Every structure is written in structure tokens, then in C-alpha cells.
Amino acid sequence: MKRLRLEFEVVTPMFLGGASPFGEAEIRPPSIKGLLRWWFRALGGSKEWEARLFGATGGKASKSRVQIRVIPGQTFRVKKAKKERFSGELGYLGYGPIGWDKEARGMVNQRSFIEPGSTFSLQVDTLNLKQRDYYALLLSIWALINFGGIGSRSRRGWGSVRIIEAPEVEYLQWNFQTSEEFYRYLPKFLNKVQKIFVAFPEFPEYTAFSRKTEILIGEEFVNQGETLSNIGKTIIKFRNRKYYHDIKRLMEEAGKKPDRLSYQWKPTGNNTQYSSPVPKAIFGLPNNYMSRTRRGDRNQPTQYPWQISVGAIQIYGNKKEDINRRASPLLIKIAKWENGNYSWIVTYLPSKFLPDGAILKLSFPKGGLPDIRRTRDQRLIDLHAKLKDKIITANPPNFGLLDEFVRELEEEGPFVFYITEVSL
Image 1: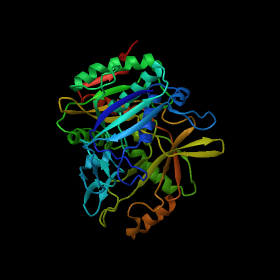
Image 2: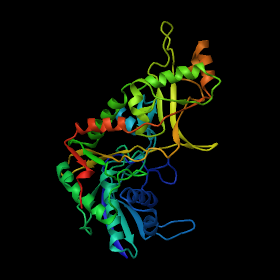
Image 3: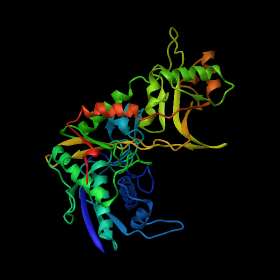
Image 4: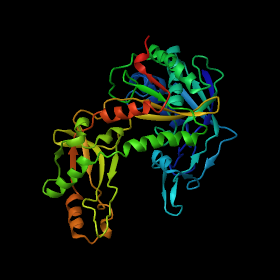
């Protein structure tokens, strides 16, 4: 048996529930192992290799060769639910664990979280691992630390950690003085990945490193909150641009055709280049849209107060299966450097967006359009009656809009690394 002990510091609030998601936040070994399995696959590990290394259940059950123990540090601190206020952009990045509170009249944490500055250790015991397996495990740990996070909304910068000490490991560099030093090290790390795993594919079937992967590193800030706010404002500014032209037309057409419960809508106008009437769905599903002026007033009532939820559906002959989630291809991590500064790191991992035969599914809220219960406008009441049970299908988006965002993000930060620069 070989034992590793790695010590970590929490960089951004970590929303990680215990036995109950809404109980006191705690770090549990199954959560860490699940993340390591994900990063193992993202680096190119096969399902068979994953089962052999981390264990499997079912017909070919096997015992895990990796055992993990979490040891809280002396500075391990937990903030209780509704005890911290957050700005609008942080609430946007942390939507779910962070939400609007009527009493506080602001965005507060709906769940408890592990506070930044908290420390903990991982004790990793490995059983009868070959050298290649051991190196694959180390690379997965490194990727989790430097590209991802732990807990809810970790793809949006929450739950980021940094390693304080890794005394037993010389295979990889774990600490970096500046963002530039980290950037200079990326080719070495990715070369090791290719030697241990496989060559990066052109376009993977699932979220993973490929020849289209980009790693973007922002400028250095003096604290983690300012760093998160910077990337949050950048995303909000981009996503607030108006791509509603087709959705408004869809709303109008759906209201005119109450006899048709489902039909396919093709993009028109400004959204044609993205192949979909809802191009921002490429940022991940589910995706919700609503009009800015939902109520209007007596003098100028809102013509179409609308709200639409976007998911996906896969069609097998006469059968249909809902696809409730599709994670964003953008992963945000907040890094803390040895010089005390912070930077955001965005890893862009484009892959097949939806399975073959899947299309977008747009639906209206069952409880009614926004503020429908407050209106006496019979026109709106009739419109709601037509739309409440209607489902509209639409073409999936291409990666055009997301590529545009990445191009703009490149201008925000000093370092951009294209994985095509890596060669064996």
C-alpha cells in the first residue's frame, strides 16, 4: 500500500452538503472520489480502466484500489445558511446555493458553506497500483485542483481549492508563484497526460480534453471575491445581449396555434448563424428565459409577457425521453497563487452537445405566465390558457455563440493556452 497526504486550503466558498444537501456543509470521501473519476475520464481514461482503478458495481463488480480519507484542519470553518450576503454577479454564478431573500432584500446563501481559508487534508491510500495507474491518479488530482472545484456550482468558480503541501509527490509541480508560472507549466502537464492516457481526440463524445480545448487565465486580483466578480460580470454582460428575437416570434406563433401541442421551430433573423432560436442554450441546460418587462402598466401593457424553460428531448421512434441537464462546456476555477494574488481560470471543453436525435424542448410555466394571477386583462388570461400545456421543439445550437464568448474572454486575460500547442 502506498499513502499520499495532501493538504488543501479552500479558496472560494464551498457548498458541499453532508447526508442532507441542506444540512451543515462537510467534505465527504465519496464526493472527492466521484470528482476524481470525472477528471480521470476527462483526461482520457476509459470506463474499463476507471472501473479497475476506482471500483465498479453491477455485473463486473470490482473493489476500488483508491481509498480516501478527509481530515479537517484546525482552521476549518462553516458558515450557516442565510448568514452571508453576496453581490448580484456572485449570486448569478452561485444560483441555487445562493438566492434572493425577501427579509434580507438581497442575495444570501441558502445553504451552509465551508469558508475560504479553511484547511483540510486528503489521505489517499492506493492498493497494488502499477506505475501508470498511480501517475493517472496523480494527474486526475492535479486537474481537479487546478481546473475544477468541489461541491455545488464548482463549474462556476465555487469550491475552488489550492494545495498547500504535497511532500510525497515529485512527479508534478503543485504550487505556482504567479499566473505566468502556471501558464508556462501547462505544456509539461498536458504532455504527461498524453503519455499516460491517450492522444487528445478531435471532438469527444462527452466533456473531455480534446484538440479544441482552450485554457484561459485572467489577470491577477488581490482577493477571491473581486476575482469571482470580474468573471461573473463578464459572463452576465455577454449573456444579457438580446437573442430573444426568435423566442418572441415563437411565443406569438404558439399563441395563434392552440390546436398544435408540439411543432418544430427553425431559427430566423439574427439567430440563423447559430442554427437555433435559443443559441444561449449552448451554455448548458436547463436554460430559462423571461421578458424584462413582464407586467407593463395601464397605459402601455406588455404585449407578450413571457417565460420559457429550455431543456432537451431525445426521440426513439415513437418514444421520447427528456434530457434534464447538459453541463456547460465552460469550467471556471479561482486560483490563489503563492504571491497572495488570485486569478480566474476558464477551461473550455467543447464536446458533443446532445445525443443523436435529440432536440431542444421549450415549455411554458405550468403555474402561469409571470404575474398572470395579478392581471384582469382577458387577453393575457386567454394567452396563458393556450400556452400552459404547450411544448415546442427547436433545433439545437451550434458552438458559434460560445466560441464568440471565448474570443472576447481572451481579451480579458493575459494568457491563453491552446491545447494544439502540445505535442509529444
